[in-house]
Image (cartoon, rainbow, N blue to C red):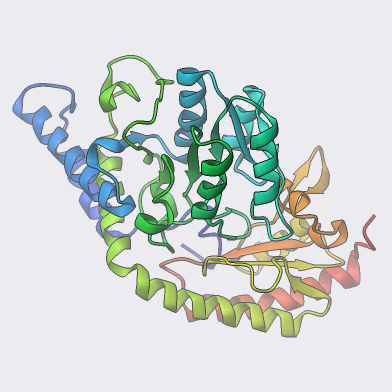
Amino acid sequence: MDGVYLDHAASTPARPEVVEAMLPWLSEHPGNPSGSHAVARAARRAIDDARDLVAALVGAQPGEVVFTSGGTEADNLAVDGVVRSTGCLPACSAVEHPAVLAPVAEAGGIVVPTDAGGRIDLGALAEVLSAVDGIGLVSVMLVNNETGVVNDLDAVTAVLVEAASDAVLHTDAVQAVAWMDLTVACRSAGLVSLTGHKFGGPKGAGVLIVRSGVDLAPVLRGGGQERERRSGTQNVPAIVGLGEAARLVVADRAATVTRVGALRERLEAGLLAAVPDSHLTLPEGTPRTPGVAHLCFRGVESESLLFLLERDGVSASAGSSCASGAQEPSHVLAAMGVERGSALGSLRLSLGHASGDGDVDHALAVIPSAVARLREHDPVGGSA
C-alpha cells in the first residue's frame, strides 16, 4: 500500500494472521458446511470455532451469533427482522448509518435527535417513547462512524426500562470493536451488529448478535442456515478470518488503544497549532474512541482538500459528501448542529492497528500546506 492510509474507519488492512487463517479454506477445503460428509463437517467445525471466538468478543452465547455478509446486512436484519416478527414501530437516533436509517424510515419509524456531540438526546428519546405507542425497537449506535463519539447504552436502556420496557435495543457496534470491551459496552443490547473489516478481518463477513428471547424474522429465506435466521451457504473463509480477527483484537486491544490514542492526540494538536481557523468537531470532553480525529477547516471544501491530500500521499475521508454536484454537510454534522461553513470543510482522519508515527509525521507535513493552498487559490467564504 503506497502512501499514508488514514481511513481505517472505512476499512482496516487485514491482519497477516487473518489472511493466513483464511487461505486453506480458499484453496484446500471445498466443503459446504451444510453437508453431511467429512469434508463438509470440517467446514462446519471451522465455522463453529469462529462462532465461539465472536461470542467471546461480545459476551454472547455461540448460539446467539448470526453470520451475515457485513454490517449493512446485520443492521438491515436487526430492524427488518424485529419489525416483521412483532409488527412494532422502530426508532433510531438521527446519526445512524444509512443501513439503519433506511429500514427505519421504510417502516414508518421515528428518528430521535442528538445533542451537540452527536449522542442520542435521552430526554427526547423518553418523550418519543412516552408519546408514541407501539415502539418495539430502538437502534442507537455504540460508536459513530464519522466522529467516533460514544453513546452510553446503559443510559439508553434505563430510558427504555422506564418508558418502553418491552422495546429491544439494537446497537450498530461496527466502529467500536477495535477500541472498546463489548462484553461491557453492549451488555444491555438485545441486538448487536459487527463487521470484520473494521478491526483487521476480511470484507464480506459480518455478525448480528441476537440475544436469547429476541423475536427476529429472517429476511433471507432458503436453506435455513444460522438457525433459520439467515439462509445462504456460509462464507467459510471469511468467517474463519472474522473469528481470527476477533481473537486478535481481544488479545491486543488495550495496547492498541494506548498507542493509537497517543498518535491521535499528537495529530490533532499538530494540526490545530499549524492550521488557523480550525477546530475539533466534537465539543471538548465528549466521549470518543481513540481512532478518529475529526476536524473542521473553515474556508475550504472537503472534496478539494481530499484531492490535494491524495496527490500528497494521504488517503482520508470527508465528514461531508457531494450530492448532485453540490457539496452538503453530512447528516451526522447536520444533526449535531455544526455550522455549515465549518461542516463543509470537515475532515476525518482515522487510525487503526497498522498506524504508526510515520503516518502522523507525513499528515502533519502535508495537511497544513494543502489547506493553505486551497484558502489562497479557491477560498470558500462564510457559511453560504
